[in-house]
Image (cartoon, rainbow, N blue to C red; front, side):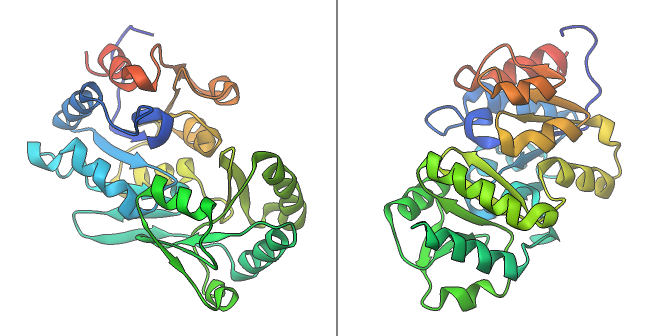
Length: 279
C-alpha cells in the first residue's frame, strides 16, 4: 500500500522485535520517522509487556519532549496493556490486576512441576528465589530484581502480571493446564517461547489503545499499531490499522491489515511510515 496517506492520530508500537532491532536499540531512521509523526500532531505510544521503568529509556531515546512534542509522547502502555501512564502528569491513569487467588494457584501449579513465578511493579521484578531465569528477565527488562521471603503472602495483594519463565516445551504444557484451570478469568500466553505470562481478563495492548483513544478523544479507527508476536494480537486486531512486522509470526500476519516490507533490523517501521503516513 503506497497510495493516499493514511489518516492516523495515534501510533502504538511494540518494542522487542518491532521498534527495537536485534541489539535492542531504536535505529536513527525509526527515531526520525516517529519524531516527524509527532511534529504532525500524532501521538506516539510505546506499548510493551515491560514494566514502566523498563520502557522509559526508550521514551528518552525518541526525545519527543526535546523537539517540543511532549504532548505527543506523554502516554506509555506497560505490562501488555494492564497499565497506562501519563508521563507528563506523572501518574498512572489505568490499571488492572490479576486476582490474588489466580496468582497463588499459578505459583502452586508452577512449583509442582519445578518452575518458579515472578510478579511486577513499575520498577521491580519480585520472586521467591533468584535463578538463571530471573536473572535473564531482569537483564532483558532493565529492572531491579528482589527476593521476597514470604512470597505467597506477598502475592495476596494482586499484581498486574505474573510471569513463569522456563524451557519452552515445559511452558507449553503448563499453559494448557492453566487455561483449563482458569478459563476466561485470566489471559495466558507466551510473549517469548521461554516466558509464559498471566494477565487480567479483557486486558491487552489492543484494549488499552481502545481505552486511551477514548480518553484522548480520538476514534479507534484513527489509531495504528505495530507488532510481531502473540502479545501483540489484540493490538493488531483492534487498532484502526494493524501492522505486522515482516519478521513477525505468521499468525499475526494473517490478522494484520498490513505487513511491513522491511524487518525490525532494517527500520521496517520508518520505511512503512514514510511510504504510508508521512507523505
